[in-house]
Image (tube, rainbow, N blue to C red; front, side, top):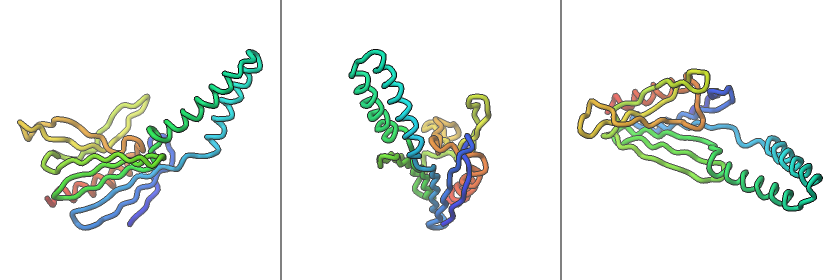
Length: 180
């Protein structure tokens, strides 16, 4: 088990945990920091102070109730659908690849791709806002033409690790795939 510190495309700290279960099976877990309670408090206070200012001028209590309700619902939706705690990639040489995301609420999503459908794993580049970013992706074979690519499945979409982290995962994945 090897845990290393890296940064994402925004410069925020992330960690990569590499676990080699065997020569044909490795797991890579990219973790991001937990939700900062201080940040949540600041956002909540700003929304509630704004609502109180509106209430002060309108004297409508529905404004305060709405602000509290919207803030609480917004935080729950953010934790359940947006905030990813960690993403994992499990590569099993003869079987396939499993991609999982664990959200702050405890919800998990998992996708499995059979090895027979995988053409290759590559590091791709894209233009994002005003910069060029790199991302790891799985190229899927076209069923009718094995030399063609039918689709691209990006990995680590939420954590967005930088190139140095992706290269480490890429090299390990290529070692496993080449043994099959």
